[in-house]
Image (cartoon, rainbow, N blue to C red; front, side, top):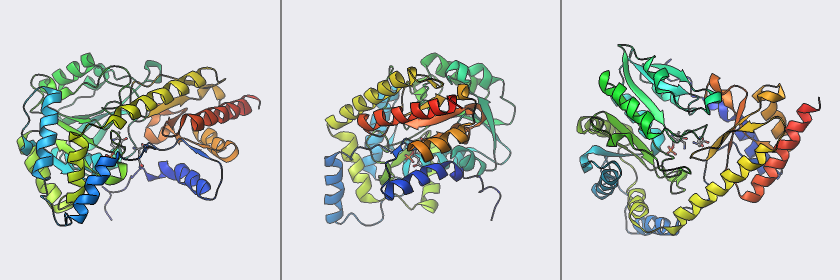
Length: 387
Ligand code: PMP
Ligand code: GLN
């Protein structure tokens, strides 16, 4: 086996798998350890997939994406960034995770450096290392609500830096990059001739303002690769439908890679994706409002908990709980929270050292379940404080 494929970050999920086993065994456990929407995929999308399956869409599709889906995605991207995007610039992949892998393989050479703020999503280290490039982390500070400081990124640029990877809204912190910060990052990219990879899987789940697409900035469309998917926005995590959008030469490489890696995404899934992106789906806005209510509920409840603090997430489906005042490690806290109180969360360090003393909670359960989880969180905090 190769050393490049090693740090999959899979151990981060051990606690989540334990929680799932307990639920399967009939125990009353509230799972806040995963970001997987608890909503059904909207019916018209499912209907299209079923109809297409019956109609025989069961053979190889175009390996770069079916032309109709490429077209829909290009038009949508053009509208969002205000710059014309051609269908040839879009490559359909198996979820944003695959898109990130493709982007990294197409942009990074062994020995290159890529700058990534940390904490970062658990798979980042592994898919970046698989290219032979070096990951240069920039710590995000809990005291600054994990907001990005572009000066800290600028300080890490060397003559080996090839790209910057930004995820906004952010998993695990819920922080969102504002327009001014994007502008500074864009200048930095142009000054040092860097690629910008933007992971936008939570872009449609903003609670404060709108997501800012960096490809709209002057001089950025030729150096920005946008990675996204239907996983979170349309409650479609299991469909594995995502895309990468970038300059033509990048897209040509990305298409070649999908040819040898995937040989295309399933045709019936791609056609369902066209329905997802072209239909009026009122359930999407309803879902958005539910996430917002859950976020508000969590923030309000945590505010009155002894020993736990949080910041209000600007977007996404996660928040960080700062448990440093309890004087125990996040691992100890998370283990007891699951074992004695029946709530699962992920340990902050799984996302990077700057999240030490924090745990990540998702809000992919009903408000009733969230209330229950908050009562248990508080009881767990009190138990540690009483020791
Ligand atoms: N990026 C981030 C930040 C994520 O949290 C996830 C997981 N949802 C992904 C990428 C991968 O998403 P997908 O399900 O589309 O592969
Ligand atoms: N991105 C989601 C999370 O961070 C789901 C990842 C997964 O299921 N592996 O929880």
